[in-house]
Length: 296
Image 1 (cartoon, helix red, strand yellow):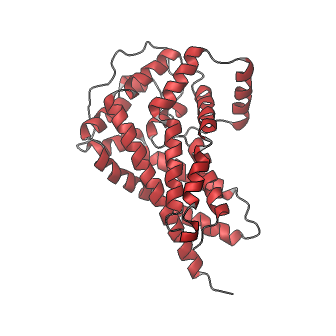
Image 2 (image 1 turned 180 degrees about the vertical axis):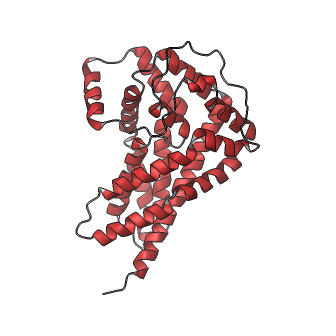
Image 3 (image 1 turned 30 degrees about the vertical axis):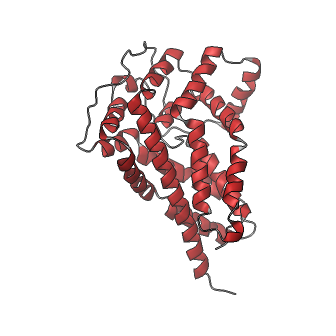
């Protein structure tokens, strides 16, 4: 099957928008910030990490459950399908139906979570997994209330908020907090890495004549990194607008710890592998479907 540049670009656009609408950016930890309701005004904790109290004899399974990774994959798949539904079918509804079916097969939450679990077991130490799982169940984390079914920010409200920043810019302290959140949680870098994985997976079996297509697309995406980072940080300001600086400092205190950073790195890498393999399944599925279509 020959994947045209147009199809590839459309899929990458769908993927990028799905990441922004379901902004785990490769890990559930960041999604918690964007989905949580404002916490009560409480002083920041002096404890950087809670004592590890696993709810399971298997720390990796425990952190998958505590972090809500299964829900995050379901959200990503849903957003990707919705974006695909909005692409013009150009008079070929059967083609779009085929792509939707392939996407549902390739990015089913069960398949993605299976890869995620496999990769986390290879990359993450049980002690670090236990620390992160304990954090999600700790009083410190409970101050950031988890909202399982939070909707994405209203686009109109986000645009109004962004325009207001022109005349009412945030303080230097607040801007610094957003930069630290982005860097500590690896939001921008996580999106870029996941998009690279999507590209590699989508073009894994490209013919020799298109061998340079992946590098060209990755280079093009990289050239827009600053724009993506600015977009991410505006969304951070919007999502965190009702959190106090002290509350965000509490959040950063834990996620800057060695165990949390080990988890974020392992989870980001595992997510990238899951997306890359999902893209390969998608390409194979589309190829199989096309071979089953009788020639005219």
